[in-house]
Length: 171
Length: 371
Image 1 (tube, helix red, strand yellow):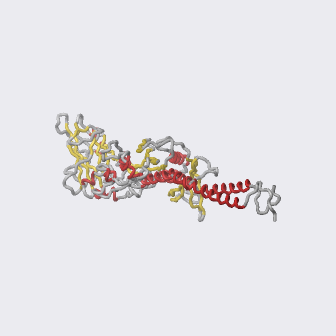
Image 2 (cartoon, rainbow over the protein chains, first blue to last red):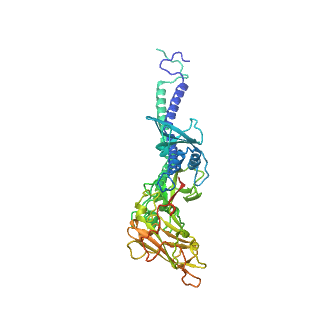
Image 3 (cartoon, each protein chain N blue to C red):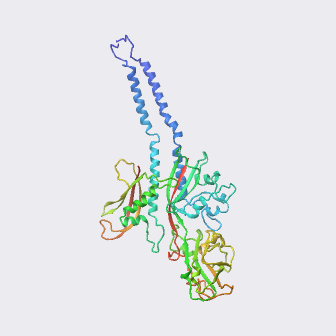
């Protein structure tokens, strides 16, 4: 029985527990820098490439017309506010596979943004395959498209550049 | 000074210092273990990178060699002679058109053989064929599967090993478009005149100067007879005749360039949807004539084919059942004689969709898996 505690420690359990806690904390902090972040980044890159490719395809006309007007799917969709057509084109594109059946686990939400007035920008929702809840780890793919349309704030139909933006995530 | 009388449940400072040093050393060793394991854990990440690299090369690069002139043909043409001349397997039409693929390059890439001595097609089991030209892995030798599905046609082509179901693999998916070459389908009924004679000439103009250097500069939509296949179908020949029981004979096809004195031979001729090419003329025709010119045809036959006006003149003879010449109206856009090259009536192979079905871009998916 200790009757005084100058220059001594109480118990070996206390010291051991303290060291174990320090070691655990050290390992936990250290472990987060091992490749988990890298994996996530690479998955994101795949999604980003996929979204960027899909928008590029939709923005490329299948053939040229005599008057050389861009008749791409993307332009037509924005000019006619056709969210259903966007979904019918974009969703299979990002989910279809070559050798196996599509599992349809990549979801998206799409909108386009344009200049409104002098200094502000406005955004218009196109469509989505599922609503964003806030917990998704989304990646963004964008494409500039020139459309011939009367956007809010415009006095007439004219050529306007809009930025189509798609947020995608794995379900 | 206090003196300890009982050491139960107490530590000495010496033990504490020693134990602390041991634990710090232990922590240090444990902390470097994940680093030691990175080499083992990162295989999947390497595979993803290899798959991504291969995907980019296939979808965004035209490969090497690329077409320069008649003596520097592109890799898909070199492949038809000797695959050892192929350096890199890119599928893009040009480096200015990423994600837009050439039909001929895609066909060449997926044209495989099991014969190890065949030098005009790739053999997956020969490591040099795909690994050194598209996957670029020396050691370890990656296993790979490259597949392409055309969305509209629901056709899938693939090359490589079977993708393992029980282990992970690196993977990339690219969305691409394949350029389908132009085709002219000429309805003979729409191209006849009042000439009631037994010999008829029909002339088609390929103005490569105008096609290549004219209004359409984008290689994705350009008609370039020097780099791409040209196909001409002439249909409904028997509907142009105003006499009963007439035999139609295709007696000659002259491929000629303005300024040249001797005609060049034709490339591939198909009569009445026969799958075997017709090699010799004259030949009897019932209803349809198809002419196909491979991408190298014009360039190998004539210098500066890309800046030429090339005429394809088909001569038909009409005979009765006894073999005697018979007069009738027929497919003819060269009224009067002698035949005039500059006739405004020549069928122009151009960018008018009423004349020629323009090059089409078909959507497709390209997947690369590496493990």
